[in-house]
Amino acid sequence: MKLTRKFILPILVSIPVMGIATASNNYPSTPIALSAPTSEGDTAVPSHSVIDEVIWVVGDEAILKSDVENMRMQAAMEGVKWSGDPDCSIPEQIAVQKLFVHQADIDSIEVTDADVAQDVEQQINYWLEMVDGSRERLEEYKHQTITQMRNEMRDEFKNRQKVQKMKQKLIEGITVTPADVRRHFSALPPDSLPFVPTEVEVQIICQTPRIEAEEINRVKDELREYTDRINKGESTFQTLARLYSEDPGTARRGGELGLTGRGNLDPAFATVAFNLTDPKKISKIVESEFGFHIIQLVEKRGDRVNVRHILKKPVVSEESIEKALARLDSIGSDIRAGKFSFEDGASLLSDDKDTRSNKGLMSNSQMQFGRITSRFQMQDLPPEVAKVVDTMKVGQISKSFQMINQKGKTVCVIAKLKNRVEGHRANISEDFQTLKDVVLNKRREDRIHQWVVDKIKGVYTRLNDNYKDCKFEYEGWVK
Image 1: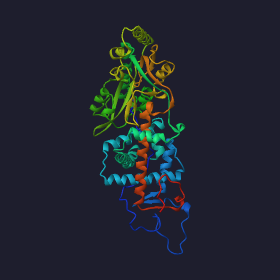
Image 2 (image 1 turned 90 degrees about the horizontal axis):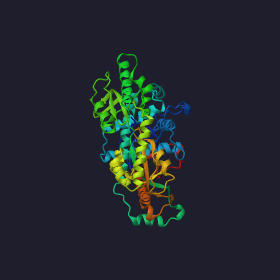
Image 3 (image 1 turned 45 degrees about the vertical axis):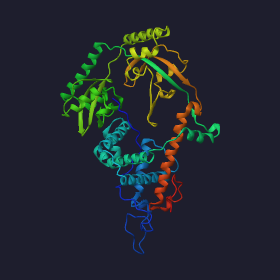
Image 4 (image 1 turned 120 degrees about the vertical axis):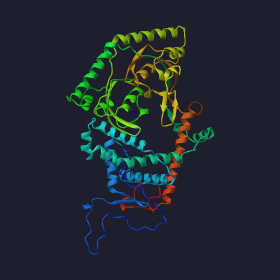
C-alpha cells in the first residue's frame, strides 16, 4: 500500500531558536569564533586545521560552515539543484528560515507533534527507498541509527512546519479581481502570455473483472504459509516482505509503512492495524481495495501506528477480462444507439465510485492551487486513458480497454471525450482561472519577498568576508 508522500525539502541542521536581535543591539565588530582569540605574537591557526567556523550571524544566531556543508550533502543525495551559487544560496536559505521561525514564535504559531512525526517518517521512508529499503545501508550511509535520525530531524521539521504556517499567515487575504488580471496582462506583449497546453475533460464507465474463488484461495494460502514460516522461526516478516510483497513502495523496506494516521490507510487495513498490540504476532488476513494482506505491528505512538505488511494481489484471468471488455462494448453500443446516455450509464453501471457520483467525469486534484478541476493535461491522465483519448473527437466514445487503476488493480473502461481545448496562448475569456493563478502567485511571492527584505532591515546580520560579494535573492544582508 503506497502512501501519498509530501515533497520533502533538503534537511537543515537544527540550531536552537533564540531571540532575533534588532539592529540597535550592540554587537562585536568581528564574527563569532569557535576558538579563543590568540594572544599577541601567537601564530594564527591555519585554515586547513579549522574544524568548523561561523560564517554568518543573524540576530543572536550563528550559521556554521558545517550547516551549509550538511545541507549541500543532503541536496546532492536527493538530487536537488540550486539556483545560483550554492555557496551563497544555501546559507541565505538557512538565514531566511531563521527569520520565519523567529516570527512564528513571536506570533505563537503552533505545530503538532503528530504532524512533525509524520513528516519525519516520510523523510526516512524516502531515504529508505533510495537505498532499496535497507535500514542497514541507510544507517551506514548516515553514520546514525534510525532512532538517532528521528531525534535529530524532529526540531528541524518542527521549524520547517512553522515556516510554512508563517508564510501562509503572511499571504492570508491576498486576492485578485478580474480587473487586476486584465490590468496585469494588458501591459504584456502577446508572446509573453503563458502557453496553456492542450487540456481535456474525460468521462469513463468502469467494470472490474471478476476474480475466481480459486485464485482468491490461492492468495490466502500463500499468506497463511508466510505466517506459518514466521511463527516457526523459519524466516522473518521483513525477509518475506522483501521477497514476496506486491507493494513496491514498502517491499524494499521489509514491508514497513512508517508511522501514519488512520486516515491515510484503507479503512479495513486501518481497523486491523490499530487493533494490533503484540509485535510478535501476525494479523489475520485482511482484504482491502489493494488486495490481501497480513500485518505485523512495529510500534504505536499516540494516534499513529507503524506496521509491516505483505500484500498479495489476486491475478485476474484473461477470461474475466474478456467478459468485462465485452460487457463494456455492449454498453457503449447501447449508448451510441440512444438507448441511454453515457452519463446515465456511468451513474448506474460503473464500478468506479470516484467517478460514478459525478456522471463518469474524471477529476484532477491540483494541490498547488487548492482546487479540483475536471480539466487534465495529457501527462496528468492515466497513460492508458491518455493514449485512447488523444486521437478521439469530442463526444466520441471509445472501444473498451483495460488499465491499472490508482489502487493497482486491473479494470476495464470505456471513455468519452467530453471536451478538448487545444494548446494556445492564454486569454482572459477562455483561461481566466489560469491567468488569475499567475497573478495571485506573483502577489503572494512579492508579499513574502518584501516581508523578508523588511525583516532583514531590522535584524543584526554579519557575514564572513567570503560571502559579501554574493548575489543574494534578498537585498540587505551586507550592512
